[in-house]
Length: 280
Image (cartoon, rainbow, N blue to C red; front, side):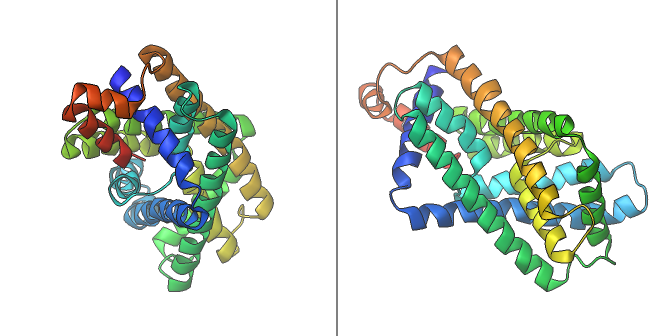
């Protein structure tokens, strides 16, 4: 557990340092936002027909295909705000970064995710694959209508529960050596959060952008802002506190920097830190 925490605080410092190249960091965050958007489009394309038929398998199919989101972030590389909520918090607790740089980096990744989600949504909207008359387009409209009727409290707690699972996926992946095992745990955690109906702020960026571009009910800028506020706050609590702080307490504060620990204990620790680096 302490070795994973060492890797996390090291990676948090690396994230903050990478913002010194703001254009590159913005692109990396925008890509992560678009990768989550890919999963949203795949989800409604795969499950839209089932929803139209009233199938009880709709939510399960949604969960089964959504894993591509975090898989792409993990393997291709991207700066995802929701997983950063855990990593940057742990870095601040471990004192490899300050709280202000942690907050600034998190805000930067959030903005980048939003930019990427909107650009991706614009491309999808322009392609016509989610036109209102299609099952997938109808599912987007149904999702937006449902989100607009959820209370702030419901959105908040669904956000907490969602990012518990997202950050558990990334924390667990950082503890594993096999890439196959890492991808499997990511798949299961995302299956759990999507099938359960929890709320992910970055996924909602694409959903609402599609709704705004398509002029759908429940997709006004006010609805979008309200969703970002409550779901984003819930995601922050779930990722930073429920998972990030909890495992920092369990692991204890890192005693030595990761680089020094790797030198002292050999190549095994260094390899483990490298695997954690990929789980951004």
